[in-house]
Image (cartoon, rainbow, N blue to C red; front, side):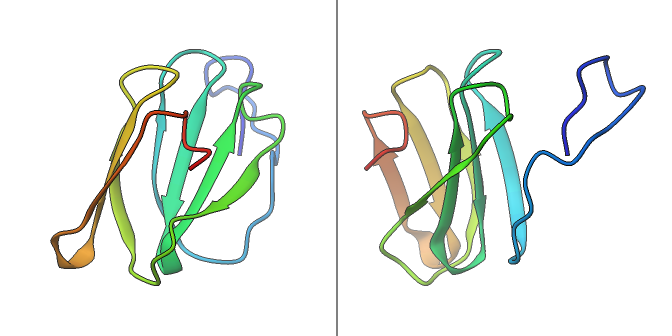
Length: 90
């Protein structure tokens, strides 16, 4: 869900039918969500739309660090760490 007024009102930004475990934004526009079955969702427009990318694993992605628009680190069950230098596109 998305809020444009600090959480006073919420609207559905996207429907997704798996468990999503963590969300992180690098700035006001660029965000990533990770979830079960290796799901990675990415937005470049503050959550108005989300695009799905595959991590290539069926493991659950359990946490994410998104320090800037280009780089992200995703921790997965089993001790795997995924790293991107392309904003989550690969």
